[in-house]
Length: 392
Image (cartoon, rainbow, N blue to C red; front, side):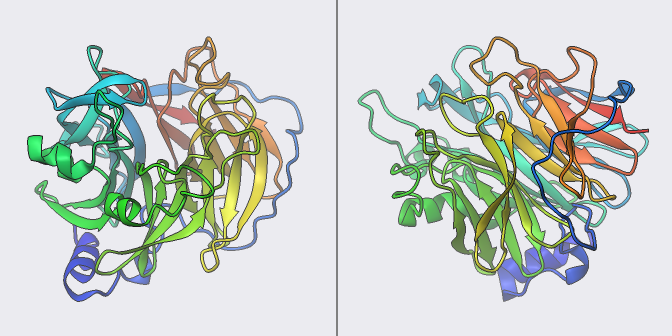
């Protein structure tokens, strides 16, 4: 918690940001260049790596991150709740306070560090929740998350329901669309309000989605600011002290029409921001790309393309970039099997060979020296898991 206190105190109280020692916010920092070319894979396929269960019983697990002592923290989007209910992107949905964050300590003990966060999910099945999603850790246990949503809920007449209206019926709705810090005792500090910025500015209205739609899904810490991926707002936002939010980079709709939908942001070895792309309905296979975003200007460069529905990115300590696809044949395809791609410093790309059934609906990825940690069953309340995939 020691590493988190400067962020919360300085962000919320005196307007100075975190020390540079924590600039990468739970992501491994790297030195040296990283060359990008869109090569195919080379060489013979490697044997399938060993897979081990790390956590189970999770409610719609999404992104995950390590603390400096080796503890793993997992954002759980939850299972919605009793209401209020509305029409969501997949049909009728209900919200509640089922979002949470789980910790698996370095001895393998699993426990919740916070619960009662905002979540909504499909009515009846409680599946495919939107809630806590992005996560980063400063020091040993300084946890910062995005509480995703509320996207663009609508009433029976088709009118958009604002977050403030939902909060009048259920106060936990006020957590939707925010970046939150979590103390060791599970107390929340509100660091940034991405929903409020979208409502008042809607920066992607001309290039992306004209509706008021915000769903912050990832967060990184870069020196004196937070960096947030807003999937609903099709933007990478930056947050300076005192909740000063601005749009650094807007992602335009694809030429074929679908929205871009950025799903993660990580800081690379060259101190550029790397952003994965889901692409919106109809979730065209092969249409997603990985972008490099200049942290000063917001300029975008495609560094790898031809992916399908990317959900998360992670850099290994050797500079390898790992990209996680939530569904290798597209979200409207017949399978729910995901995929992981490794992209080396030269831009050579290969898919990691895994036994069939290893990656059902994955939600997030984290990398260590010798393994990848992936959340799976990301749309399932109570059936979510985290697995360890050996790299050696």
